[in-house]
Amino acid sequence: MRISALLRVSTAFAGAVALGVVALSGPGNAETYRFKIASGHNENWHFIQLGRDFFIPEVKKRVAERTPHKVEFLQGWASSIVKATEVLEGTQSGVIDFGLFCICHEGGKLALHNFPYYLPFGPTDPSVSVKATRKVYDQIPEINQQLEGKFGQKMISLVPFDVYDVISKFPFDKAAQVKGHKIGGAGPNLPWIGRMGASPVSVTGPEVYTALQTGLFDALIAFVSIMDALKLYPVAPYYVQVGFGSMTIVGLTMNLNSFNKLPKEIQDIVVEVGREMEVKSGPFTAGVYDKYINIIGAKGATVIKLPQAERQAWARALSTWPSERAAQIEAESKVPMKKVLRAYIKAAEDEGYVWPVRYAID
Image 1: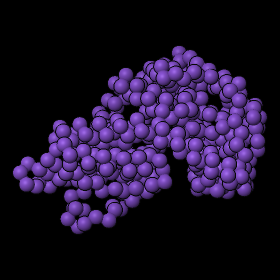
Image 2: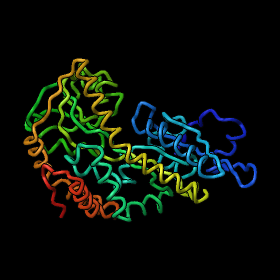
Image 3: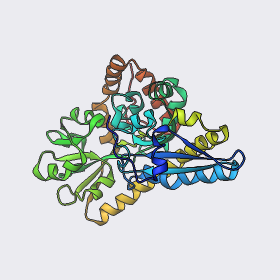
Image 4: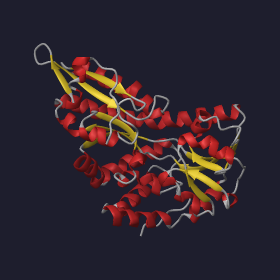
């Protein structure tokens, strides 16, 4: 794996970067712990903002208030230390101490952690999504065992994405109206399309505008913020609130060696603040969604809400897929995906969510 050039750091600190947590002794037993926290995503993303504006300052403040120690963070966003596809390995190797990344970039290695993708039309409220996902992490030990045992890192905080919907060149308010159209997507969400008679097309961010403009595809599964960020209004003026679900597939992880080197009181603060960031992430993410719905409407997009009966029709078309996909993953990776999917269905229901179709995981 190639790790990108490190951020601007002092010469003295740069020599210690590869050694994990750097502890500098101070008066008495006081020490200064220096962490590297990084992501391939830039600071426009909501989960980077949560890490930058809540997690980092809160850990620093509480360590200063409750211990004789001090912590400092070297921040490396926007691929300045690791690319989006390098965060897992960068955290595992100790090049960084904390990694903040979309687990979707590790569909093979972390298939078990991508489980919300395999249950489309799940909770659209990010708070319900993150609470239900945390319950699954706490109930199924194999999830954390895989991350810690195989990849040498600890899940500190989970963060949901806002709802997956459809940005489209054509208006539709019935599920069957996507039949015959080409719809763009990425990785795990492509199977949501084919069973409705549409043709899935794999796409990356930089290609989207041109692909819509030239007719490579007619619509795109995406977040509402993408419509504004990529200025898609002239080529795809319709935003259809399909409600595929808010997927909690962002993780803030910490290198286990770095974590284990810390005094117990600092370990407790890191875990405590991580869980509080997780609680905040639901309302924060919902706020991002509401903000951008207003923005795109003001800029001329037509927002269409798919009726609940049509969500049910689309979900029925996918009704056997979660169990089939789980069986494939279990055969390939020897992980308990079916057990995890059943747990998530139940956890979402415990949070008050009613599935449009309750998938049978055989």
